[in-house]
Length: 598
Ligand SMILES: [Zn+2]
Image (tube, rainbow, N blue to C red):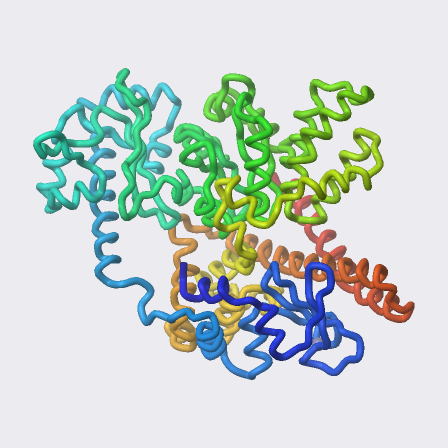
């Protein structure tokens, strides 16, 4: 976690803004008189869950804790960061990571890279690799795919890899640390992977962190992974993420499967936003990686895996992502690899028909029931209410409670009372779901993948600066992104940009510069993708405005606002709606044109 992220995580925006503005609670949020313009009726709101604030009055602007302090104290980003860091008790490091530790990790990446190259060459060229080549051909993998995933083969030998790596200068203790060799009885060292098809596993940046390996004979286990090392941790790893990331950002959805072959076959058939988790339950660190790319997830589940427990887990993912998780189930006994190889169109249909997890649960629970009978109504309610109780987003929860009430034809208030008894006590997630740790803290949802992608494009292709329309700084919710955008608009080149930025932002800048490294955007596509991003950002911004406005509007009605207030709010709401409508019109128009071209 970067120091900036840590400051964000430890900063309570209500407390920070509360020093300047007298805030009162209003639903889940807080409101007060705007400190930036003069007003009698409070139109300044603070959203603790998002870590953001917004003035719906004359300013019509908002941001996070950093931008509030910057505006209020008239200071730059670096100074705001230092003040908030001090408040939060975070020491800002002069270097991102202690040198020695970083060097050790770098060394392990190099060893893994060397091993991956060695295995890859063996698969392509060795005589012993013939069996593995046949296996790969039998699975229908093309030469490009084998190269893209850098598949490999490990010899049926106890020390071939050890010797090879020793010859090119790696010490035995380094090979042990990388998990490539093992220590047997009497301290004898031997290769950990033998006679297997090798799958190098990479992190988001494409660095090889470890290996998966499939037996080519009947050795057990059939699949073997690298052990945990300083650079490899199964629960922090997503297979295929480096290759899938650009498409995940572009399509704004990740498809999660379970196997290496699922991912590889999917990519070969053009479904390149597919990745695999390294086990059935998805962990919090994995979700945190995905969150930076897209908040939308489709989980491909085995037919016999998709029980209510799995659904509860999915609701846990939804809570952590603050987004909807969709589910598809595969035909009995088939995995994605089979389905895609047999009929890619069928896989596409499955994806198109993916259901939001709660709707899916409704279907699953009611499938065997006759909902006109009292006994089955009770059964359905007993099984669905606990799932609904886990939903943390109140609007979605209310939506599904209504759906249940309609389904069993029972008064919604009665179900609400039931639900209140079931509602998780604070901290309950902690012991229940694998996503425990995150749940206790308020989510800090500040960085959006579209923001990062848009900026990465703009940095990589400076000519886009002349492209119209340009994104406006307020379309970026993340202060770091805002800073970099405004800096870039003024700077002539990257060195000038870097020099103009506070050093605390360099890590984020490097991250953005790395974004497109792995797979370049085809030349003819740059402008189109950038235009999509700009449009998406605007849409997001306006949608956010509108959603918040309608929240406030509902509240005003509840609190019995005056007619004049309500009319004013309504009038303010019309402007973003009109702009949104225009954007939807443009999107449809574009989609039509593209459709015609293809
Ligand atoms: Zn204001």
